[in-house]
Length: 130
Image (cartoon, rainbow, N blue to C red; front, side, top):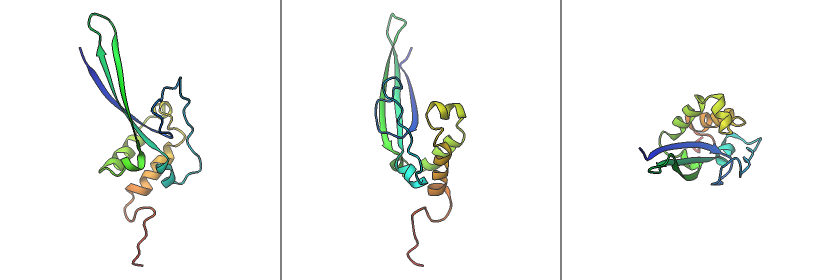
């Protein structure tokens, strides 16, 4: 059968394309950042992975296309902040750990809530009329 295709995503503290744990040690998340600065220092990594069966063999060819985008840019897309917040809020501790998000999970949720999901003026935006 096949080809089979899947899409996966994560958030990272770096813009390196090679994310293989055996070749590239995971970059640590910066500490002490404000919620806005954390968003600015985070990358949205999404991958298109394909599996192609090799005819006549019990083997497959695996391909991967990696794309990286600054999270601040990704969050300009309609519904992106709410969808990301929901995905992070419902993510199990095991998945957080696997993706390396445990150290910043709560901070990312807070950043999304403060900057994008709280009604009223956005963080950093002032009302010049007062």
